Image (cartoon, rainbow, N blue to C red; front, side, top):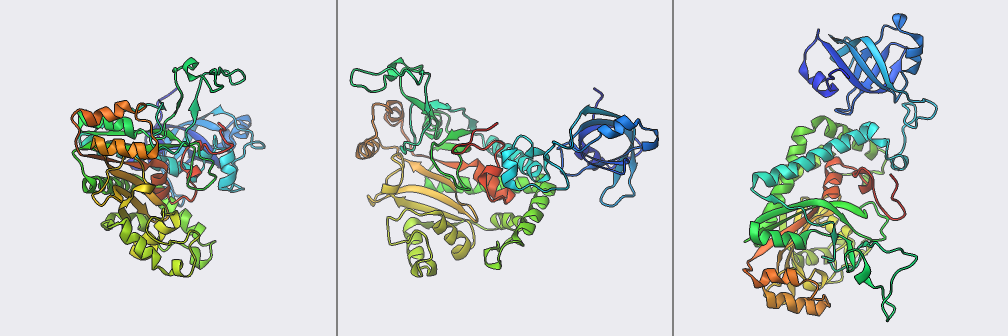
Length: 479
């Protein structure tokens, strides 16, 4: 295979008059003369000019939409509209045929996003998904870059665990049992002592608890990996398998935690705007075209690129849960009973509609909410002196709602044990977690950033199943 040049690099080089080899997939073939070639490095296609009069007709017939080809030729300035250079082909080789009668991605039809989810193995070849997954790649790299520059240690926490960090009981069980012949104890319960790990295990819902162990020695760590929720939720915002970024920092309090989360979000958004200008401009136009189909009152106030710049330009609004409840209780939608879940008073668990109202209507900027009632938050969050609230924080974004959830962790052993007893969380199963409070405990904090929700926000897509390569949700584990 001869050395190839990627189309993006070739278009950016500005060179002409050189011999090049390019390889990719045919997007279009017009008049037996002009091939539009794409290799995934950019949404742009490179025009290949074919000398059809001196080319084998059998070869011409095999150059179909979707076929993989290799082209060697001279790079020349192009007179055609929308392109600066083209390749005058000297040799063309078809590397992989594509039957045009069976190939589901044809120019003449524009498949819906729903249909493309059914052929997720091919949807990368569309401009929309090419742009999405290049942006996803950039955001992933930016996260590692951000933490590396700050001296964080990247910690790989386990995918299989015996703990349920959230205590919600929505974990996927992991077993090596023959499900037709599960061993039982004398009392009839499943005998997990005979299972592979000798105990009940599940896929992780969070790397946080293990991350805290690392932070108690390495100071600043982060995890970035897959997490799982067996939640029977068929919404545009939930997945059964998704990726989480979870930093944990020793000697941090709640304000330090919020400062870091805001800095991280601004850093990665800014990095994507710098690195993926072409992709984001494409997605911005796609969203504008989509918005035109909606009634005026349902359209976004800001275009995608404006929304991203808006988040960079504004300090995030910070307020307590108590202040937010008062704003929501007195809001027009609440008084007119427009909320699906009415806000009756303190203690209400905020829903996405409430979070979006605060961000999009009231403050018109990203919001950091702090100090939630302890009854609606997890056992590990530090209890405030008022006895009612915990040092928790959520970051709310326009169009998304909650994008980050975090807290200062409870470092006091007696307080943590009392809270675990109140919630019925067995201390003997988390003895290793409690040890960190016995041996050199210190104030520490951390947060979780749902990666797909970040990608959803940056790309302007409306369904979380469109920003992960192969979505997993109830009744779906294809590919």
